[in-house]
Each structure stands twice: as structure tokens, then as C-alpha cells.
Image (cartoon, rainbow, N blue to C red):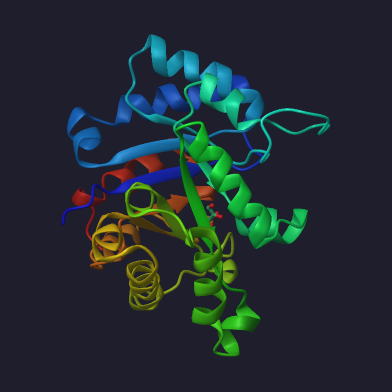
Length: 259
Ligand code: 13P
């Protein structure tokens, strides 16, 4: 089973809509047809940028996929400040990050809420990028797999194999996010391999062989090739380095980068 790599830029709360337009245009000058053929590329700007970025991608026919960082689990209602997955679908958003550790830790998102959001995203025919990961304390206590696999079970239980095959999972050790610390490619492979084995148990071997699993946490052009050489790592969810278009383009072009 060959899985097409997917490299996603999570801009977090950075770049206003003017900066977003420039960033996407600059990125498009650096990426080639071959890059898009080899790798799915998505950018996940803040909500206020989405319409502007959608327009640029559309008008300039840039094959970067539009992503969002978050959404509410309901379609509409009295949820001040929240964004409906239906609104995102209307903007041609393809991928929605869900359960990012920053949402879980800073905004109290539980496994139960994450599971509801996944339902809501799938209902709008978008693809969730489901995040999981352990804290440093959990890693040091030897609890990495139990934490991560609990998150995966909660997100994926009772979903049929076809649905699971088309999902994206992102393993992001919390201690590696924005810290400059990266899991070694072997450590990342070990956890991602365990995630794939868990998915085989939950949804069958075919779904596990098809689902794409990204690594996230201080990914840079200097470590991407090594990570992508691992058998179960299918891409990256990139934070800080996705704000620099040259650096992000080099990450997408990991095929040409020597580790
Ligand atoms: P950094 O690449 O800045 O460590 O962020 C990773 C991340 O959280 C992506 O979602």
C-alpha cells in the first residue's frame, strides 16, 4: 500500500489576511507540479484569513489544499465566537485539525468533544486531521503509548473501515511542540507504528494500511527527510516552520533534502 504523503502547515494564531495572501503566493512560487503530484500540501490559516486564502488558491489555480485549525461540533446555534463545520465546507476547506494539544490543554477539549467534532467534520465531507500526543511527564513515566492509544481509541472506535482509511492522524508529542526538541525518527516511528497497529485492531488491516499518519513537533527542513524515511510516517504537521515559505517549501520538497 503506498500512501501519498501529506504535509500541513498549522499557522496557529499567526499571519493576518494580508500576510496570509502573500505567504500563500510566495509558497506557490516555490512549489512545482512535481511537488503537488508527490505530496498533498495543506495550509491552516486563522479563520479570518480563510476567505482570502480560498480566493487566491482559486483564482491563481494553486493546488494547495485549504485547511482549518478548529471548529465547533454543532452545525449552528448559540455558541458565541464559534465556527460551524458547515461554514468551513462552504469555503472549500478540505482538512480540519481536531484535538490539537493546544486545544485540549488550553481550551479544555476532551476526548468526547474531539470525537463529536470528528463526526461533524465528516458529515460535511471534510477530512479531520486528528491529533494525539503525550506530555513530557507522561513520556518520562512510560505512559506514552497508553495516553496516545487511548486518544486514538476514543476518536476511532465504531467508525467503519472506509471512513478510517481516509482519515489523517497526527502524532505530536507535546514536549516537542515549539520547543526545538524533536522526537528522534526512531521514537516517532515507534509510537506511530503502535498507532497503526491499534487502528488495525479497531478498523481492520486494510484501513490501517491506508490511513495517513503525520508526525508533528519542531519539524524543519533539516529533520524532515529522516522522519519521512520511517516506514509508518506519512507526512508532517508543521507549526513554526510553516510560517517561513522557503523553509516550508523545503519541507514539502523533502525528497530533495539530505538528512
Ligand atoms: P512546531 O512545528 O512549531 O513545533 O508546532 C507543531 C504543531 O503543533 C503543529 O500542529
